[in-house]
Length: 382
Ligand code: NAD
Image 1: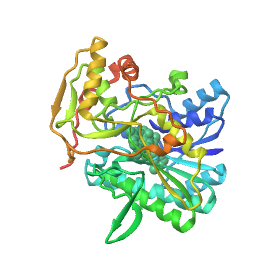
Image 2: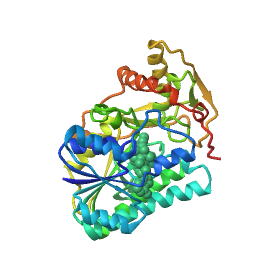
Image 3: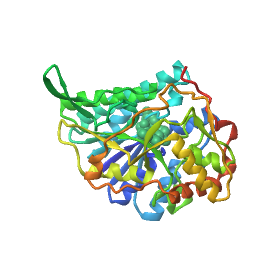
């Protein structure tokens, strides 16, 4: 297949591009490299040193003989995107290219506006480009489990059958997102659903849980192929952030009581889920939703798991509770369905002590790169 990986220079996109290329697909990366510029804005960095996109794809070609084309540009520039579609004629468009940090979207008005315009308009341009240049192309869009929030009922995969005043219908599952970033994903989902209905586009919305880990078989082939690993209070996600805190002798900082429960998956499963979606395209006009996660944990559970593994490695760490910068329930019901990807063949890489130890080893190797002032959260929702 000819596959575009938009956001292919990022944490999820880079390993996905490599994996799909290894499987024999013709992969093109589209990325405006804004994530690297945001590191400069935040005076932050990836714990792992990351090569330029140019060097990354050159190394991949040297090691495997496979070419990944790159298009450096912005989804918000429709002329650029149109040219990419004309040159690549994609069968599938994997869309990772969004601003994905909830705290970043909550910094101030400017960052909320940037997040929503970057994400919502970029995605709208992709929908128009598919309609105009590649109507058969399957859109595989990264959504998030955070779109649903934490309702007091089971979370279904995209749709909910309800009975109201004696009548029944299957309706989009209600969304209660917790940041302007998560809201941008909800707006995207609505736009995609509408485009599927009116233009017959085929789309899969992957409502992904929080991704942990950094290595895949492909990124481990050479240091130039290494993936980024975020740890700061803005882009670092729970688990990866705790592991890096443990590696640098920092307390594991749980927000509030730590009862917040979220869905998680290993980066190795992210790449496989995208492959599964690509191999089983949605029908024409279908807006399909998969919940893409393998397990859920409370934040307190995760901190304790990391503390245990760190202890076995000879690192003494404390779990500390700090004021929660977010507005969210700290004790709540959480049960989400995730059978569709499993039914199509996903075999999960579960969170074992070995997996935590593997990420910890990588974090220890580069711990001198951690900028300590960036570890604690600095952005408040209020
Ligand atoms: P990331 O920030 O590491 O990567 C995103 C990439 O997209 C970056 O390389 C960035 O430069 C690029 N990009 C952003 N806006 C662009 C634009 N307008 N045009 C072209 N390129 C642009 O993020 P990630 O962690 O790899 O996440 C990828 C996707 O997966 C996001 O849509 C995110 O919402 C979703 N997701 C991520 C997680 C997670 O835990 N990382 C969880 C759920 C969902």
